[in-house]
Image (cartoon, rainbow, N blue to C red; front, side, top):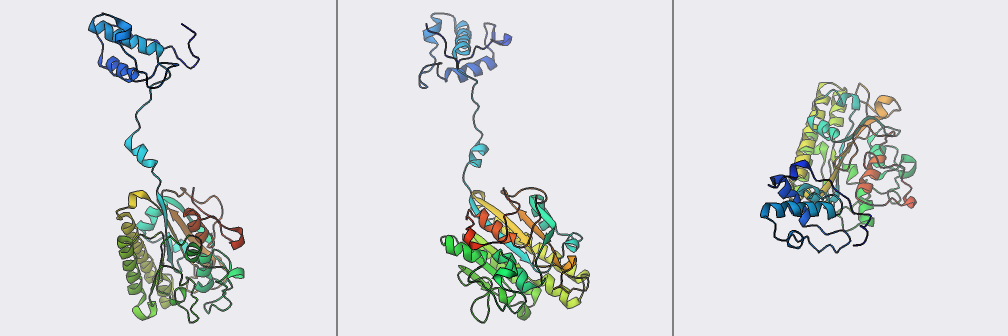
Length: 369
């Protein structure tokens, strides 16, 4: 007999297995080893007790077979893979839901009961010290949020949208349509300039697959937000979207109406949180949810002063929150400072879209692995 291959291992026989009567443990080990190949032989060659133990008694034959298996088998026995481990190897389809809540000041957000946003934050990355641009009004704020560049590039510096350069710096949903047209996109908003402008070039372009245009001033902001949420949950239940943007405008308008960040404003934030809960529940109720990798992003366009105004350069007006949640999200606070322009880039990267340097985006992916 030639020398034993170096990959073989000698095994001492446990004392509990040395008696002639085999134990349940010895039977289990022998059965496992008997199904494995000899060292240096083909994997389909199995141990054969009859070749090794002659006419020994059944108990002795069992023990002898175990000894042979222990001294000739290669390496440690492999354990069976659990079904959940196999399931974890299944590739999940990346999808992204972006929820924008207008005019939410993060220090006030921290004082309001928001169980749904809190749950998302606990399952992801959250910061209450992200920054938006200047001037801190909705036109440039949402353009930076959705397009991933600062006003110097997208050209919007007020709520009149003059000088916009959306042809050069489109919103992230339009980017998706340009580079991955097979993906399904969705937008609903009740602040009209985001989805409808007189020149036919709103912030979120007409290239998006499903577009819902609501008017918060006409419907009432609380009612319009509720309608936006219903349209979103219906779409999640009946279609197969890959990227969604949902805008909720009631908190900002409520603060303007009451010229404060007091009770009414806080109630509007709590109502927005309940809307977030409805949308997240609809995501998780999808029949295909277990095969999908949802990233949920939520942020705002600007903060505000204690009298409800905004537009200036103060910390109260320019400090915002940013939340990134899901199985692919990091946990805890972001490793680097976060900005409103990071939202669009984070959404694109999660979908597997490579950021082309020619796009000249100012944002970076935040809170994703």
